[in-house]
Image 1 (cartoon, one colour):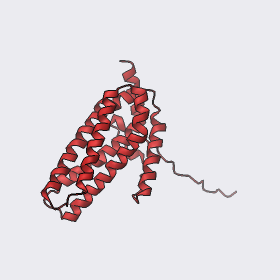
Image 2 (cartoon, one colour):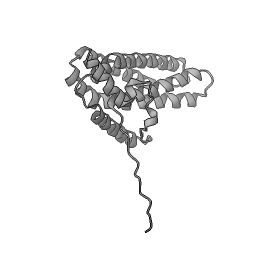
Image 3 (cartoon, one colour):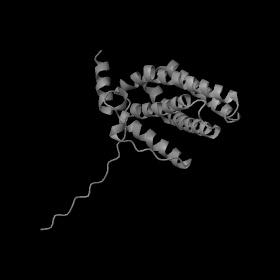
Image 4 (cartoon, one colour):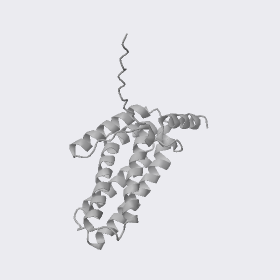
Amino acid sequence: MIKRPQLVLPTVVYPDVIGLLTLDHRKVQALFAELQAKKGRMRTHEKFELVRKACAELLIHFAIEEGIFYPRVREEIHDDAAMDEAWDQHDSAKSLIILLGKIPPDEPMFDSKVRILAEQVEHHIQDEEGVMFPQVLVSNVDLIALGRELLDAKNAMRARYGMPIEEIADEQFPEEDVYLSSSHAHRAAARMRHL
């Protein structure tokens, strides 16, 4: 009898919603860090391309949060102050992104506005990860299902704008980061429920 090799289909790994949004945060932080590290040593078009990439990532991230994540989370965590603050921070960042589109990248004002945007985004990330995400972890939100929904919506937007589709692999979820592993997220949520 001839043994046929078994066909093994790759599995799509869907992160939990907290892991997906945290990965987005780290990606944008890395782009802003690269801009800072290369400051003064990049050509204008290189700087503009990095800023354009950071802004595109932010706008897609904001869209999935505002369209899917925030409405679902608002129903579950009942923290209107945190939710309203997050929306305001998005609006402020989007205003800066629009302004950046009107300033030539070789003008000093461009660098100043990029720095302000990076600072605002960093503050927003700290608020979400320090205030909102812990509340989501102990809520009744289905972290995996919502993560799947956000990733699908995000990839549909990326495809529409000619950006590469994101495939999430287990390696992107370092063990030490509680937000990046659904099993860790569920364990953290269980621990927080017992406090």
